[in-house]
Amino acid sequence: MSTSDVNQSTFLAEVLEKSHQTPVVVDFFATWCGPCQMLKPLLEKLVPEYGLVLAKVDIDQNPDLAQEYGVSGVPDVRIVVDGVVQPGFVGMLSEPKLREMLQRLKLKSGLNASLDRLYALAESGDIVAAEIQIQALLTEHPNDPGLILEAGNFYLESGNLEMAETLAGRIPQHEKELAARARGLQALIEFKRAIGSEVMSELDQHYKDAAQASLEQRYDEALSGFLAIVERDRLYRNDAARRSMLALFDLLGNENPLTNIYRKKLMTAIY
Image (cartoon, rainbow, N blue to C red; front, side, top):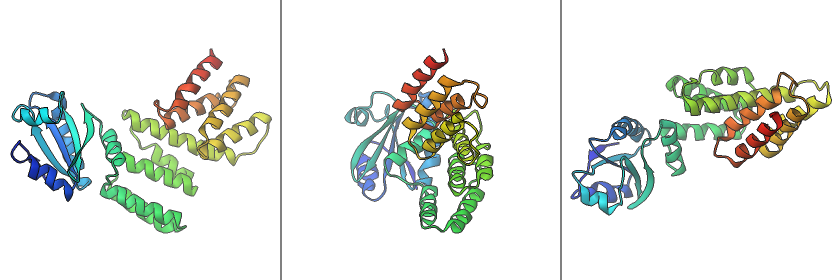
């Protein structure tokens, strides 16, 4: 889709009216703003992928527009749908965070739409067709970390743990958010293996139960189970219970209340 510079006289036609046909991303920016220059290529990359229109507004050239929409800092990005200007964000966002924001607004990229079709195939039981599609997507987008993680989860669910592990290992460690998700995926792979392993002791059964709870997204129960093992035997399976808790923190994210609650409990148990 198109990218255009918009001013006071063209805002109505190029943004408000056009948004009734296609969602419009409005980027309030300034030429002297460093983060604006960093954000620009990310927006220009994502706009065609999501089928959007990008409207750029220079606040120094259009102070009335900036005042009308309450712009106090740049970059300030808004999303306009059906003539309604919705809040977006102020400041610089990473590409993964930008994609999360667009998904929260129910905006889908072509890749997201393909993944939806793939999930529908998998849910209908046609795993072979779903795997053919995901391999085609990986061939088309070989370096897309979000897709790689989605594919890893697909293979985890289908039971191909080796392929899931290979994909998790392709996520670069310098991408902190993605690397945390990859560690979470790796943990789920280990939990899958754990529930299929032989039970040799009481702690083995407790670990297996916590692993099963993790896979079923009963995270409170899972973290409680792993914590109980830490409190009983730190050396169990080379500190596996503590490492499992850390992996679940990666999976849940730092903003999840369970992460904060159990991180404190873990620190108390250890120290």
